[in-house]
Image (tube, rainbow, N blue to C red; front, side, top):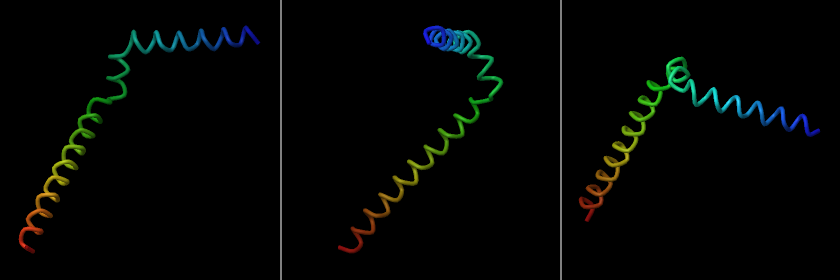
Length: 65
């Protein structure tokens, strides 16, 4: 049982080393940077739409008064 725990821990250490040492190559291979930019753009558009909806609701309430 102990040797299985050692093997798992060794595998985790190798995975962490590969992730740290080759981070840039992994990011380039997965092209995650453009995906992050698209996600940021969607979040910005969502916030802008929410702000616009709040402004319209406020103006609507003013007009009803």
